[in-house]
Image (cartoon, rainbow, N blue to C red; front, top):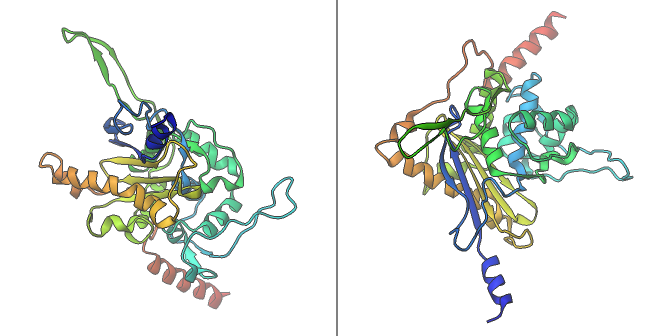
Length: 343
């Protein structure tokens, strides 16, 4: 045995970190920084920054919701190119969704559910990259994000804590609350020495947050996170989510959103050079999603917390946007026909 053998042995271990908060108070309910601290002295929640992959895409879609788009807006699913400074050849992101839908009209809800880069690229052409980074800052992302067109691929390094706090904004009606670990400090006699209050900022309207909840639920009902609805998890409660997979399958992410709890999971390795060889093994739906699913199943099985399973996302008052995209399409067709007949 040599020091090299020891290093190789410890590098081999896949790491995972996990954080769950109450989105309405910011209070942290579960926290796993990594494996046994005796051997892995590194916190994957508040110290570590990793590429977040497609878990960054909801922020781009949120900018769209702020600018009058709805989940049922249709876009042609074709390649989009960007002229980059200093490059003579335009950059064209590769598709990341089902090939049978190439060239067809698809909804924004479908685009996020399938994590299709063609649709994200189209949205990126509608807005400045700085619009996305500015929103992310308001939603608690303190890590540096380079405002470039490729931002939606999630190559930026962000802390898990920041991601969980940001996603909590959607379930908290558009109000961001920074994750809170300590509410007060007491002395040995029970006297309160100090109290703490979380950072709170209203970022989105209630309607915009609800539209994003609808989009995120599409991920778990028919998109990349659908396995959370299947065996062995069979979770049928109201829940949204987003998977994330990074370059070379080095990092897998899953962000889970329920009315009562927001959770984030990162799985990967200390060293980016170590990774799974295939997407089937290295995608976020395989590396990270099961951790969140097992946790939620245990929560619902606990008599003290099982009532959470029936919780539902609250629909805003006077909300009139049609979220059934088939109905919305028929209504738009009838309206267009009426306008043509009249004029």
